[in-house]
Length: 328
Ligand SMILES: Cc1cc2nc3c(=O)[nH]c(=O)nc-3n(C[C@H](O)[C@H](O)[C@H](O)COP(=O)(O)OP(=O)(O)OC[C@H]3O[C@@H](n4cnc5c(N)ncnc54)[C@H](O)[C@@H]3O)c2cc1C
Image (cartoon, rainbow, N blue to C red):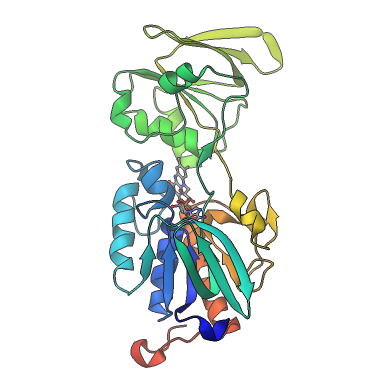
């Protein structure tokens, strides 16, 4: 089969989120022949799709950077090397034969010597409230992320959750919302400590340890009822114009179940080289899992050179050292 294929890439990167974008740039820096495949019509992953207006504070080199601006910078960086970018292509299957991977997309086949999975959490599916909510109420009253903070101007907003997502949203809405209440089932929060200090010094109301029990939606005056954990007789009603449920997102990389790689909780299990259980398939960013993995950008970016340098060395990929000198 190998001899019949005209175009074989050294590396095909699946997923054009921030980590896939940086991987494509870094592969170009190492003079690999690289292709980047993204299912959406735009690069940028979760930053473009879920929180473009958020000011991120844990990206190296920036005290603060808006997610959408950071993606613009990654795009500029990526344009420095000739990466073949395929937008609106969803990878459906990956098959190996004769040392070459065949990538099947909804728009045709591509071939690569190595594969870099950077599919993040796959299609974004938020975790929802543990009870059924009428579809109309969900559409009008509940959100799972904040694309435009201005939408919450002068509203009473309740946020459910105790992780970074919930706390980030609360801080982002401080300049817009009239009142913000956070409901969390524990007294302790799992969010970044410096952000918690900001919350404790703000007018944000914390209701802990409480769980949301019901929603009373009305287009003019809505409320939610919360119940104290292990004390079902202690209930409170909170007047709320909008509820934001920030319980995180479920990994939904169902497609990868047929790619002949071991998955754990739907994520790609990798070793210290960021290689999956199938030789030649690597995984980086939110798509992979290993002990103590943190799903943050800095971590994903750090995995990029580990994976690419190992791919180059182990699979004898050709780097053109005459042009760019030796890059270790
Ligand atoms: C609300 C929220 C706030 C956050 N804030 C921060 C923060 O302040 N700082 C921080 O460091 N991290 C933050 N994170 C985490 C950060 O967004 C992720 O760690 C990061 O997006 C991971 O990048 P990625 O490229 O691995 O995956 P993603 O951003 O998920 O990108 C994956 C891309 O792959 C594409 N794809 C998926 N499947 C396929 C397929 N089969 N074929 C082709 N393409 C495919 C998707 O369309 C997507 O574009 C936040 C996350 C959330 C949800």
